[in-house]
Length: 443
Image 1 (spheres, helix red, strand yellow):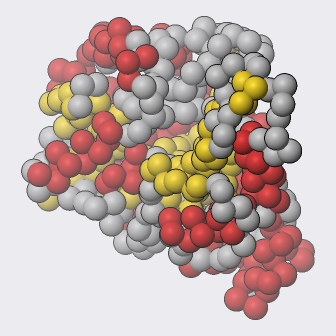
Image 2 (tube, helix red, strand yellow):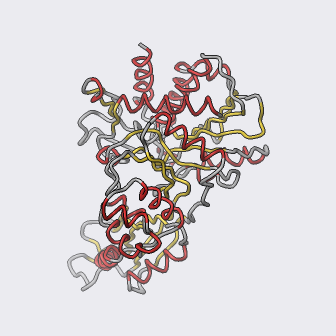
Image 3 (cartoon, helix red, strand yellow):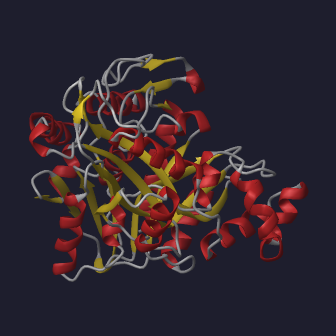
């Protein structure tokens, strides 16, 4: 059966642990070699009919020549994944096991959602359309990054390569929003959230340097205790909630399809935002992140021995900067929240929010209409992508950069991104392939 073969190909690629790391000396590159070899074997028509280049070592660029090259499109994804061990998983993260039957059947594994699912679904769609004899009207580029989870250098190099060749895509579609239910109060229909911009991704480091000594004679406030106080203060002080034009558009779109009090608030957002923002922020972590810059302490480091006071204590803070704000704003907020001049706030990496893509015109309408065709009854709305994607590197060459993964995901499934038990319904994956097939036929 065709569906069984497609799932088998997906399983084969999920089983290859293409884990990217900040320290590239720790990357097991043989797995990336194996992945590229498997792609050639599993998708022979793609490799026979499309031009292929390898950029920055392992990122892939395919070009499918169309009848014209004046308005090319880019379909993107990344095939690297974050690390995972068997601990706590119901099914091993790189076993790609199936469970359940019929519409309840699930495929488990690291990368099912983030982001091998999209990459392999795109390749399945291209392979099928080549076999059907399709020639696209415009050139189509496939760009698959190999280090999105670490630094995105591969995608950056690809974008620079396309720019050097004068290629300015009319449409760029990368991972991002999905089709969700129950995410918005008062909305009963499925909602496809399409990222038209994304928050800036910035890394700060809190540093305390202090006199060390023997742990048997500690000072009243050691470096680690001082750092802990700074973290607690920071955690207590969220960035202020705000509303930007993209979120206004999202609320208005949802308002047309909402009922009750929340529907009234959505539809009249210009007048009701002071009431809506605190209510929306309490709906959950995802909703809260949509209306403010967020901060999360993700790494701690201190000390060299169990009986020695740490002379340096550091905390890494991951900051996702809201549209309309800046890196400088974030540094000021963190500094004021900590209220301790002995804590140095260092900017490790700085990433401003991305430009806002058009929410009108051919590219947007193509994405919207394809969603509505493949997923009838779904509400399509622009939104601000909370996480960073490789597509941020393409905003300099295209006004039509959108972030949408065509998968129906429950709240529980979305919470497995970068966590244990990542999984997707098999039927969801197969419908994703149909989305890309329909989109490709219209490009």
